[in-house]
Image (cartoon, rainbow, N blue to C red; front, side, top):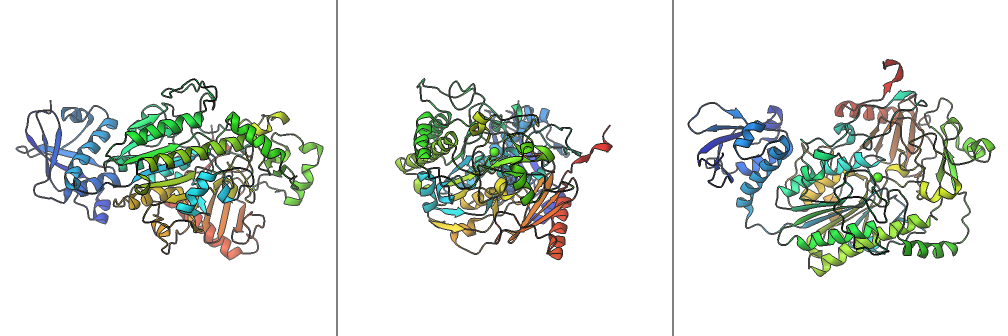
Length: 613
Ligand SMILES: [Ca+2]
């Protein structure tokens, strides 16, 4: 099958509007030949520019591949069964992969003499807060290697995650699209509904759709060897990373958190354990990622080192825990309280900061659980020795990667991105509203403090969404520079394409904007950015909400009762002074802009309870 040596016409059918908009060669015919070995060859003798256009079409929009034998008039759409006949494979998943391979082959002929593209290391830390890094102002955690990277690259001080929990941000990194547009708006599989809610959670996807051309697929299509080490959290089974552009996945585990914790046995397939007593998951993933770098050979590589750390369970490596036990003992006394109270900003009678402070001392608001009027406690100090040890082991991992790149002579040809997927876990996880955290479990339930930012992982305040980010672009980007212009997770996709010298694919990464100009030191204006979380969070009892940041201002709109908050981040980074009543025109303008954006992306909203059966 597929080895008859005949030639076929082939063309791509695209959505008409997009083809016109991008002036692509949609509808042009080429030939596809199937050699004796079953290998597929794509030729376009009459349209020499088409292979590039084909690749662009495929990346930018869903397509149908149409074929016909040279002697037959009618076109036929390739269906899975026909794909088998052509030697493509049997499922839509493999059709996607094999078609990509064909295009690689075709493009490879054109670019065989091109210089090797730069490698890309995307070093993603889970749940690392904006203040959890030395060069971002941590008073307690030691991160010499991350700090060194900041001296070699650009430190983004207003970088944001597209969501305050894991999966949606990861989906944005992989697609360049907002979670609201994708419909993947909560962590997978998401929080279930509880009685305290006045609304029901919006519908949401449970996996990254296969038709998205992920960042990994875009790089793989251009000759990259691709590997994910650590957390995926964008779908199980066939929705795993091996069907979304990655050649290598370690471990074979798509869940949110390390299944067996950070100490062996890890209970995840594909991790080598050498049986040392001090074996530690972050180190193990790191060593296996170093092997991947070594094995890349002549090909450029894309290493997505997506550590499970510093997500809970909060379990540090033992030697580092002892280091921080000693360091904490020498800390001067911290003047502020260990916790403050936060309520639901959308409460019909929202509690003021003064009231919350008074309630903190009342018997009714003691303990660590969901307290009256949906209040919870948020940690205000960085003094958790288990968490500090987790942070430093991640830092050591980055240091080993940089050392390996130096050893292999690849440091000057490797782009390194350091980022986090959401803010620090300074609020406990009350996914089960009946959970009670005992006093001797506080270090496991409250990881860190995001001060001076308000809120925590799970909140739309800055503490939930502002994250540390550093980008090193050797030879092209600035070294030791600071950029305070906002950027967000959708921007990595087009930025990486530009940095490695590939054309942008705006229909795919349509919510992203390349920040390469900012790296070069050119003027850069990101424009407004948006958040959409039509669910109840695990890390607080606040109302579902959306938000917009535009210039210095940030507006939050809550969906239970319609409360709006407006903050000027330039003057009020801690989001304490709500300007909504003082600046009604500005508030109305941003609110209209946020709502127009929701309409444009067709964002799903929470459902009222009364409409449910
Ligand atoms: Ca996370």
